[in-house]
Length: 404
Image (cartoon, rainbow, N blue to C red):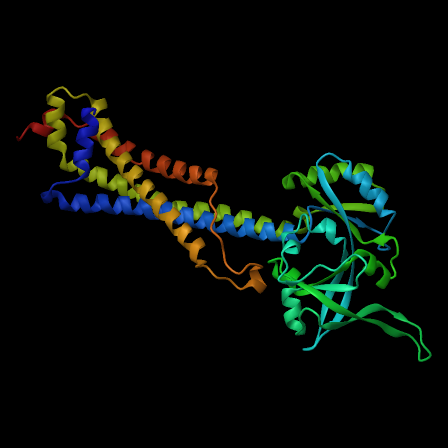
């Protein structure tokens, strides 16, 4: 071990008569520890919340949606779907037909979005369709209805119950136009984990939905699944070049731009705000080392009289500040990661699902985020001892030992 490192490690634990400096050193380490721990917890919370909401949104919707600007529905959708599927980066294309309806159950009525899907294609990319809460998927030619978990609870229905569907279009009768209604049997109940989707969605086989909504051979939009979800804007631009002018692709990022922009801004602000804790701890390191230099002036004079260079004195006090930063950062990482593990294991942070779309906040920390936190902490704490170390190196040994 270099003698500079040996001396700095002995200075780190002050003797009994210098207990005050030892307490300040402990406070400095504690400040760095709390700062790093808070950074890890905050970044893990924001990252976990963002990724969980993103996964649920993408599980309930799609990466790119191709819509008809005319509002009449997409004609020849099978031909267009085949053309789009050949574009590089597209995994699957599925048609969707939707219409706003009114559902009436045992406990009352509720507005819902009726969606016609090809379940065999959709369930390959939607885990919530592979494992229903109860019941089963309806057959392609079966007029069975899938209800979201929260919607079924609001209507007071279960698998096998009958529901009356009120369509927005009307039919003529001797008494004039009257609303069109249809009684359907609930074949299954699903839970996507996205509160809004589970509270407003009723699903039917596509062919049945086309018949009920009088949209034969038409769909409302085409849903695309792609290989790289963050390449959706570039892929959408390529699709605009090959699609007819009345069709417009919209990405999942455009639909949820405000949500993810707010989360990204909040993550940045949290990082900068909580990093101030580490900065304050760095000020404590500076104060501790300045006091240590004043206390060890005699020792510095003796070392320089024995041949120690100014560079060696500078290293002694730099190493002492660096060790405070290293110990505090290491403890902060251990405690922060331990808290994240406990919070995930016991679901400690509960949130209202009707507001935040999730029941609890998961903590997820990316390796690059952890590296950034450790890097910022070490940079600040390594910067702090430079001034005290430089001051120590400028001590005049003659003046230090004059009265010894």
